[in-house]
Image 1 (tube, helix red, strand yellow):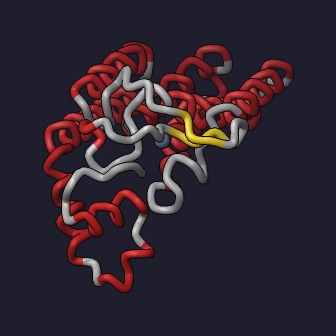
Image 2 (tube, rainbow, N blue to C red; image 1 turned 90 degrees about the vertical axis):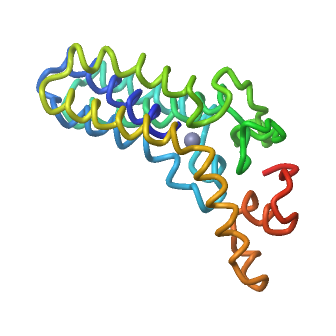
Length: 211
Ligand SMILES: [Zn+2]
């Protein structure tokens, strides 16, 4: 869903620049980075280390309030960044579970809530990242940015949609490549693999139980 998250961030940035035109293009860039940032934990505690589905939106609300009181370019960009970070983590609850083949729907872990001290279960409104429904959502989110955004923004959005389309087409094949690569890792190093790959390694390709 990372492309969808980046697109959501861009739209948040575009909306902010409608109110504070001086924040163009910094706020749009901040939104894109905020949409991307949480998934930098992909190989280090994915959807836990940098995902804050409760604290994130709270922090975003504070940053947005601050930007309303003092709409400088810096504060607007910061507000958009945290809004994109918070929205990303909260949106992950609506997707699939944390597993190598999320279409099998075996994982009950969507995103970790530091507030609740436990994993939140996946609601699967979008069955998994890279599902056709995910691409449809990305296109829906991209539409306002394509309509309102200026040339470079529209171009970036179109490029992201193209990448998302390619990812959707290759999603299942990519998972099989990852599984095959995981098999090539020498047993001594398996403990360093993220859990979802290590499980595949141990069970020789049968459906992972969780994480
Ligand atoms: Zn995420």
